[in-house]
Image (cartoon, rainbow, N blue to C red; front, side, top):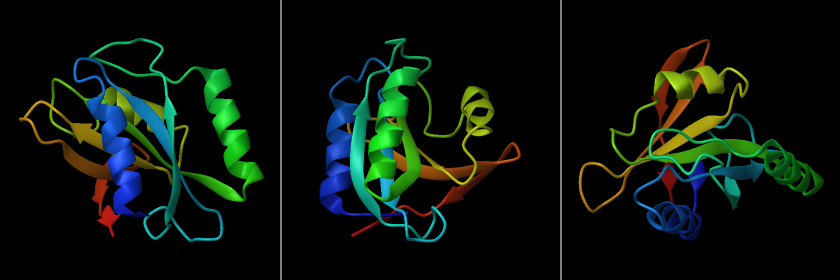
Length: 139
C-alpha cells in the first residue's frame, strides 16, 4: 500500500494515544487502484476497540458497517485494517490470522509498541492462513 506521510502520521497519532491497549481502525484506498499492495491510501478511519484490551481488538460491527458504507459511497474500498500490539512484536497473532479470513486482499497494518519509544510499523497480507509481509510505501 502507498500511504502519504500525513496519513501515516494520523494513524500513528491514534495508536500512540493509548500505549496500554490495542488501538484499531481502517485505511481506505482508491477504489480504482489494483490490489491492496499497489493501492493508494485515501483516508484513515479511527475506530474504538470494544474490548479496551492490551491483548485483542474488535471494531463494533455497527461502527465498521458505517465506515464501510462511507468508504463505498466515496468510491473507495477498505485497503487495510490497522491495530497496535502493545506487548508483542508487530506480527500477526493467531487471532489476527483467523480474523483475516473474513477480509481477503486487505492488508493488516500492525504497529508494535513493545520494543521502545518509537513505533515499529509493518504490513501483511494474510490469505489462506499464510502470512506474507508486504511493503508499506510512505511518500
